[in-house]
Image 1 (spheres, one colour):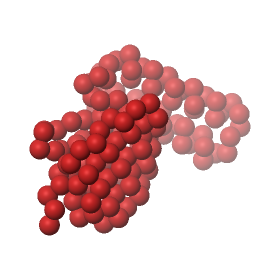
Image 2 (cartoon, one colour; image 1 turned 180 degrees about the vertical axis):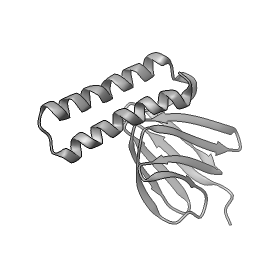
Image 3 (spheres, helix red, strand yellow; image 1 turned 120 degrees about the vertical axis):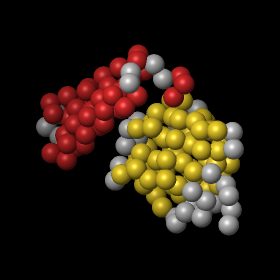
Image 4 (cartoon, one colour; image 1 turned 90 degrees about the horizontal axis):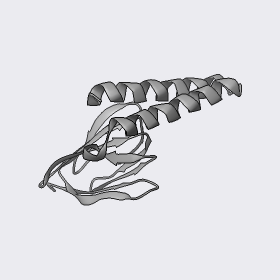
Length: 137
């Protein structure tokens, strides 16, 4: 059984990680999950949260705002809408992300979007605010 798997994290701005890992905790839209070598093939959407990567170099964390994760037995690819290494995250970054979520929610309500889209925007806003509490920012 393999001890590691290939992990790649990319966002539209940049590639943030490409390394061999032991495990990755993923903030999935349907609940948190941990991907490890020999994981069953899975594709999941991400909710705003902290993606935690465990490798031989130690643990690293990234704040993600959403996106997708594709898991196979040998690899995990995360395509994040936005991703910021935790050590680069500031209160100003978080405030900007929360304000973007507020604007999305406001626009969805004002434009008479279908009820599901308004609920999704409200959930995004709640998740972003909860992320700040989780991170103690």
